[in-house]
Length: 189
Image 1 (cartoon, rainbow, N blue to C red):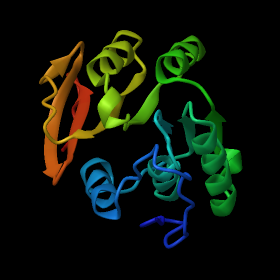
Image 2 (tube, helix red, strand yellow):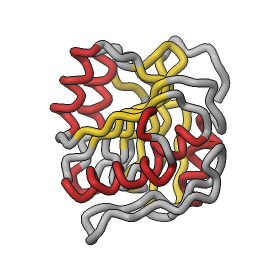
Image 3 (cartoon, rainbow, N blue to C red):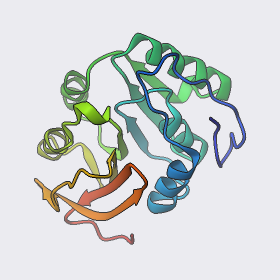
Image 4 (cartoon, rainbow, N blue to C red):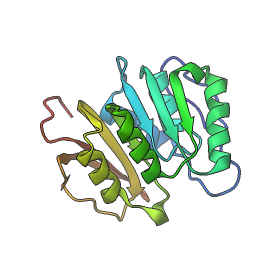
């Protein structure tokens, strides 16, 4: 596993020990960033089911100013911290060990508006619609922000959740991607 592009291109990243996490493949990671970037001019990201931190770190490498990483697993939490150190992104990140809903509630209190949110929960425990609703209701996405949902390819997400609309979907074998934006979004995709 490695950083694909940007300022840390080619840096090797550690994987979370064991088989509790499923790292995003380079092919899918490249597809994600081709859909939502591929580069950023600053902005704040949220990697809610961080695992090894690969998606958020890729975002930092491609120009995000800051990323908040969340994972409830202690080994994932430690792996994210190690990978941020490898890449020199400790000052541009916050890492929390918490479950997704508690983390969102804490972030809502901080009134942070995110430019990109990565949602890649374990496939067997997906509550993506509930999480999208929480994000929508709390107005956590910036005006031109993007939410990237990685999920099982047999999962069909609704076309809209609250004020979020699905603007693109793709399938890569067993992996599905759904991109959501605010229904007032004026940019391209």
